[in-house]
Image (tube, rainbow, N blue to C red; front, side):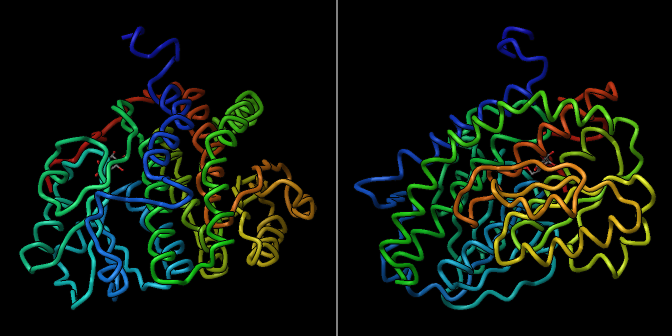
Length: 367
Ligand code: G6P
């Protein structure tokens, strides 16, 4: 009812606005004396050093946080990471070996395939860490250890704040592992901790641009196809940006690794097709710009999302959203905000049932 929405038109918008608090609640209890302390992990430093591989298993948007985490964990802690959607993992007879760790990620803690993947891993004698939002849910009860994302109840079917909380929990895990394994120095670690703590305020700033994004979104209410491109973590952001848009607006959209464009998607670009280009990764910036130039030359309208100050992007785009500077591993948390707002306003503009998109369930408890 209206009271529960606290004055917002939809739960989704309310939850988008709760993200600074959500992230703060997920971070704060785990920072002590300028270090990351994850007591729930129940792992000694020795055990952390002995991890040979991490398997991340999840569905939907939670899977997308896993894709992001692969880049972050591999980059920071130098541990190989495999990410699977749960319905694939459970039936592919996954190779689990000595020293492997399994992480399942789930907002509800009830997703049938994710729960089955957890059970499969535990039956084979592997410990499972659950990153879960709902306290006392099945996954929380059955996992060997649980890292809660303190997002509170999420009502809108399309996840926003739980997604953001999952990302934050995974960043902290990656930083913790890197610290223990000696793959990050004190100075870099301290800098990342500062950047992590700045995320809530930076998100607040981005939320302040709501009207600008609403205005832009109104132009795309009638779009037929929208494409999202990016490389590395920007590709992971694209996956979630694209899913958010299509699940609530019913506009066909696809996310593509920007370097893969010429192997398919580019033939779908027509005059005026909107391409959302994510370019937040300094090492990949020039490469993504080249891909933007390619689609622009085929008539695409390019909306870019990049870090403040990256003015060079303007020559390759038609519209730019700048996000505040942060550590490159954390950009998903900022870049996703304008994409959530964009999806929301496109869906509202089309008169869609934003909080309850057709055919979708908040929690999928059948396989
Ligand atoms: C459903 C929801 C998605 C969610 C996915 C996984 O499909 O509509 O928003 O990402 O399930 O849910 P979980 O509760 O396991 O995170």
